[in-house]
Image (cartoon, rainbow, N blue to C red; front, side, top):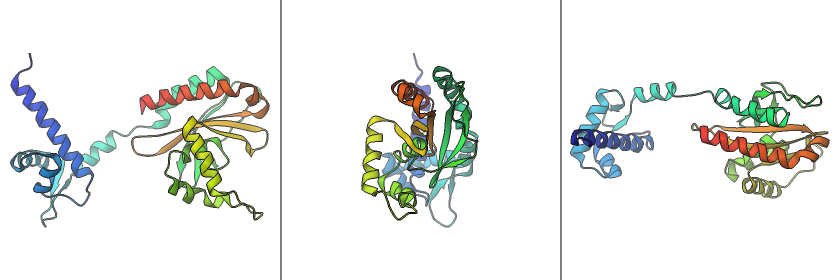
Length: 248
């Protein structure tokens, strides 16, 4: 049977967490009264918890009356808790490559392009291979389109505008591209059918890490083989995406 003191301690921790979350939403700081209203606690209770958090450097009180803000120890804990996405998901990428025999790429969204950050090379004699650090466009690649589908339409328009305007004066209408993005959101994967590189097709999925960074996993495959194995490649990639989401 849990002792009353233990239960009280757990309640205090939960209340402290609520206070920290309330302050996370307001970088400018809040007064004791504002915090109390947001977490629905008496001001006196908030005062006691805030004092304890300040003593641990988890909160700061402004000497100029600017209110209470998150403290430096929060930043230290956040830095210590960061993890390497590439290292975390690599076993899953390797497993996907073993199941399909194909090259598996991991890329990260950096503004208006994708950057390859990891790769597991497939065992097929004829395979697609790109260099780590290489950049790829957004609107003609499976990983780029999958990554864009994680964003709001306004951000998609911002990042894809230049690519949608081709050098020869022709342009792909944004409304048509947004229609493709909506289909990607619905089905959970994006396709590149000879769009970026002739003779190479790909399927891609994307996910967002806890820090809000968008990553994409893709399978680039010679088009003739992709046509034959498309359904299985999509199924395997979606399984990998689900496994990644359980991790992150």
